Length: 532
Figure 1 (cartoon, rainbow, N blue to C red):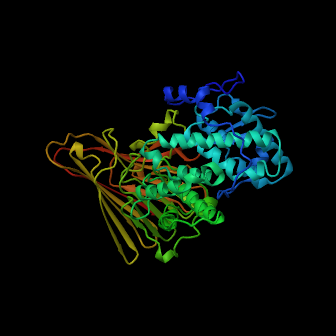
Figure 2 (figure 1 turned 180 degrees about the horizontal axis):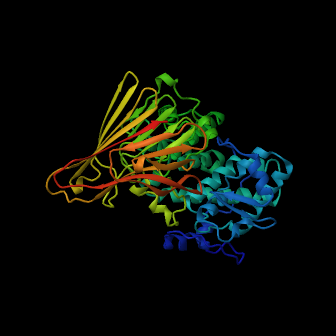
Figure 3 (figure 1 turned 45 degrees about the vertical axis):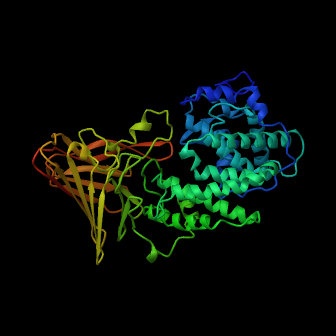
């Protein structure tokens, strides 16, 4: 991939629309974006995301750490770093690091941020595949708009002119990409928020504000389930969307514009699920491509949550249930989809995570990207190598005097004439988590096959077999341990991985209960986690 007119190149693999690349990189298309230099921005949006001045200090010293990958590039331009992942490059070109320099606030930091932006303009002010693709472009133009005062302020001269001209061209290109986007992109709430900011910032885009506010209203209806869950079923994405919508609400008020009632209602509906998805460590459960996020971001966007006694532990329409007792928290994906994790769960004891899903790989060109979405990477039933994708599941919840029992009937394997019924029970003191998995053949057409119940264990714990392999001891680095036992005659400890933090793959272990189904016989596996 050519990087502007410098003669240099940077290789970032990806699935490409070659015809679109050919058209958009042409001189004719580039000139159609306009060459007018705006006098300035009509409005500067305020960024709702917190910065970290220490990260800016690290970049100043030449350490570029994005998505868990680090490259030390003292006195070098970072854009052409070798052997870095596509995700690393997309984070770099997305300019999220501008908020760190803004948080740092020093003169030296400001000069360095300007120097990096100047370098980027020198190489990439013309459309470059990947770097000018929709999501990377969206992040960059939003960061440029939100930090324009930090970068250009009252400054005049070539940098200011080049910055404003390129920012406007990028916004125009983003409008066009949105126009030809698919249904998912048309309903991308964060993308619509960014385009509304562009409408507010540039005078010649002002007339597009109302149409995009209406588009936002339609997208909110299409994207949010009746109980407040986002259609992605991804906790991290859910938090990011809440943050973007809160930021838009605040910026519309700052711009003196009325806030659509539907926007405020959506924020009120979405916000409580952030607390719902939090484990005892304050971070998020790992489902459907989401990562743990940070305690700070979760706290920042939960200020509008209802009081604890008014919070729901059941989001049936979104396909999630939560059990809370003592220090224990259990979060269950009752539906599955888009990842193949139907009936999977995560379990934490205070700040210590015990049972987890494996997480995700953010680099879609990595060999791990598709693997992490498969059923074996979730704490649920695996049957005969078939994916436990979302099906028509029924869920029943019983809460009585502190006891909680959740019944899930999963039809993920109905095509194989097999129904999976999972019961999970949590005691009032939170010291006993019990489960029962029933594998029930529908009729004689069921073809027997191997099954495995997997319980992936967070890497902060160590596993050991006891009592002749009938019991597994789970010992965290700090705090009380847990004892796992079951009626399964084949219990083993296997290798696993955990990727709940961005770019950080950690080796860990899993408990595996395995067996074989039969044509006309139900298989019942009982298991329990008991606090030692």
